Length: 349
Ligand SMILES: [Zn+2]
Ligand SMILES: [Zn+2]
Image (cartoon, rainbow, N blue to C red):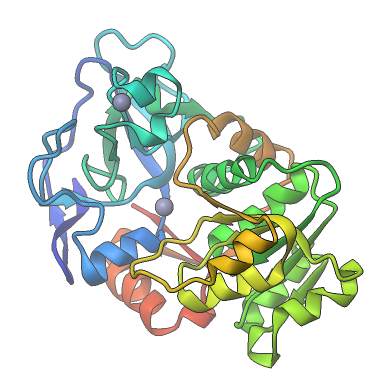
């Protein structure tokens, strides 16, 4: 079968590889749609980041590896011992592979598993015609969720987990820094979880426009001044109860701090690749909290519900549909060279 194989930094190849079969406890899926994620770009541009350099402690996998982890498809084969999932099921797949034995797994914090691995990094992924995954990672999607929408269950779960981490209460004021895919999904998940107002900060005009279209209370351009001063008059000077940092850069963290009010919770959902200087005096004096958020332990059912009834809308995030053969030129290179033109590119095998 055809697959996108990661060999090294800026060395990914469309190759003909053996079709996987469903081993014991595994499910073989015909991939329908797989989205390109920022982390796929990181691996392409500067990997290995999440891809293991030596055999992964849980999966034993090391490069070369097939990447792709935001996907949906049809079950075509089930291995020995599989009982919950059947041939013909339409599924989305939780990318987290866990040991089910460690301290963190035993308390349900699977995203913190001591041996955490991810499909598409430490296990062959879904930029391929077929993929085989453990049964426990599969979640059935209803007919009302299209395959394209199904490919968003994974990033929506990331967003829903970030919202859960914020301990949001009904009616609270929220700010989201960064209107990329995760920021736009966090914004909608925050509304779906009871946010009163959600303000979005984003420098790219096309992304601000989309945030507004998807329901943002107001959007701010951080190149036009201090976004903290922009939210101030709209909130009687209180600013946001919760801020989601969805970028991972020093400037966006500074913006998140400026958007936050006294006693605010600031959730870090962006991936910081460099250390950042941070004015902790403003955290201490105003009793603010910094909260990390990574992946998801159990948010797939919630994500599927939000997509199924339209509380989280993703169709307008897709701005390009390409085939596996086109993924390097029209996918990775295009996203790197023209980020302002894109939110999400989805790939069909
Ligand atoms: Zn992803
Ligand atoms: Zn574990």
